[in-house]
Image (cartoon, rainbow, N blue to C red; front, side, top):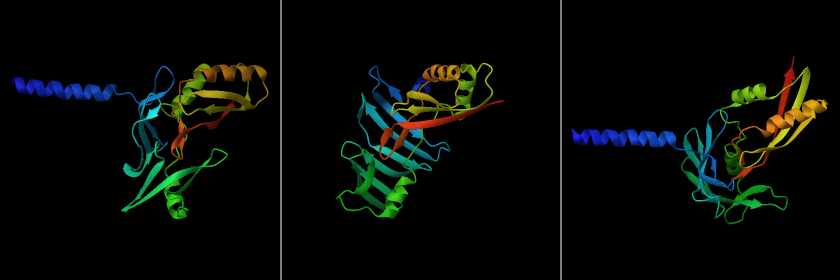
Length: 212
């Protein structure tokens, strides 16, 4: 009987540990730490990696429909693209403008079919934690529109850690509304950042809003 109680205690401890696991965390210096996991809106694509105080300590794994389709070693710039039984070894070429393009690991040109296959699952756009519905709830609760009626568009940047900055009203010329929008969006919780070509990225988001 004692053995049964011990096994049950271990079982519930493991459940509790799984429930308390936190992902996408930052340390006090705003460096990525622990497991980071991003998903596409429809959950078909998932990108996972792990950090210790801003340093990669695991490969970045790409999954499509829960199947491993690529693995990237950020420290070695070594990308394995997995398509059925074929694995291609590639890397990113960093251009003068900071953009990245794919080439074979031996610096030769990568077959376009393979690069297009990788690009089909390698980009994830920023997502508000909990989904777009919770984003609209946050805006509705916090943005005071006064007597404004009409259309407006708010533009902001989501940085590689998920923080919102560079908030601008790009449609609508109400100065009070512009200030209110900036104040509200500065209070916004962190987003899940965008990811492309092996790295977390700055992403511009446009948010249209119609007030009847």
